[in-house]
Image 1 (cartoon, rainbow, N blue to C red):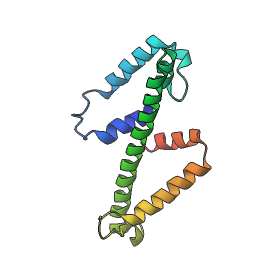
Image 2: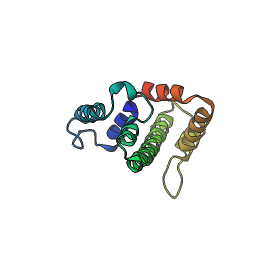
Image 3: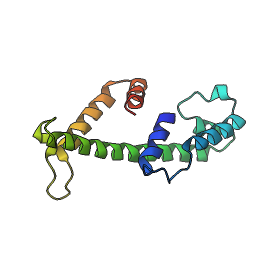
Amino acid sequence: MQMASFLAISGACPPDGHCVPSPSSIYIVVAAVLTGIVPFRELGGAAPIAFAATRIGLPWFSLLIKVGSIAGLTSVMLVLLYGQSRILMSMARDGFLPEFFCTLDPVRAVPVGGTAVLGFVIAALAALLPIELLGDLVSLGT
């Protein structure tokens, strides 16, 4: 969860950091509030913030947090996929990858070759590998 939220902040904010003055301060405040609601030993699950909301009697807020998390992570993954396909296109232009990765859609100017290959590889990995390993692989790449 921590790595995904870091990716969300780094993917959504400009590189100069004007979006959030100190992302680590956000994590510290959230951790302090959560440990004030629930003992820290109980926060080891997949969705600690939603768990804390349920624990204080706000199941509707827990659902809202879960839906927001899914929407946020989905948008971040799409942005990262788009950026990676552009990187593959640049590498193909430099001759490090086949020219297939330089193929652009004539209407949208999107690198369809890299997007298609990345989409297939990511879908295959998501279908075949356990979620814990996928989480480690995402953390490894950042």
